Image (cartoon, rainbow, N blue to C red; front, side, top):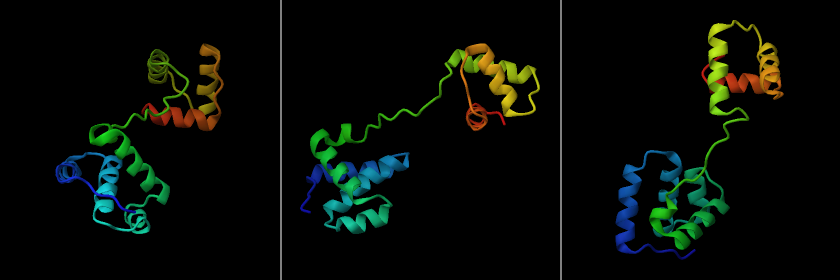
Length: 132
């Protein structure tokens, strides 16, 4: 695959590689630097722990969007079905009432907001908001 960065872009990428704070951005920057050095896609994917299609996708994204847009991560994780206000109310309830298992918490949520959670879903929710 013939891929070359302009000299200025290479300097920007090398600077970004040293300053990015998350692994995802580091991998994206490093992928293009390794492509620029002429490494085969199979080696890049092995070194960085990504699949071949991700290398192609990163290259296309950079060519389409440029460096600034390429590094933006728009992913927002799933926060569940409860609103922030409901989570605050659940936290108050958990701090004032002792629940011995997740089924009791699930029953309380269902009674208050008519939302059904499985015991594992409750365990995940409690873990996410700092309870066990």
